[in-house]
Image (cartoon, rainbow, N blue to C red; front, side, top):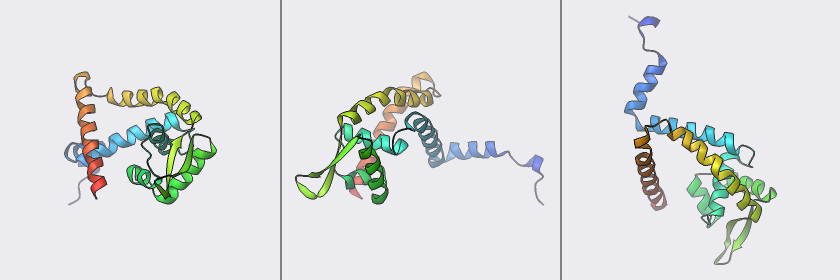
Length: 161
């Protein structure tokens, strides 16, 4: 016999129960909340949040090659080309042949790109801060440290695949 609507748990309680028992569901919710907050801050940047991460990698000199950047950010090669074209047209990054491998492109931030990234750092940090403020104060630093450690380990795993 089918349950009546009144006897079924509401969707919010089902989602909450799934979140409590499924790490992927919880991580996905945190990711989507962060992405939404980040897009609100960097939405005018070419490529939105993906453009921000590309620009950040270029400013930090972590964009050793276009291919490595695709792998690191999990962006398709064709999509990355369009994102870089848009960022380059905006004067935020530039591509140059890698002197050690002429088949490879190095991505570098321009002076305007560095200025724009510096303008965005505080609002981006504030967006993350609003999300982390949902945790008890004594858990915030611990959460950040654990997340950084997990991200580092996951990044190393991705590089070995």
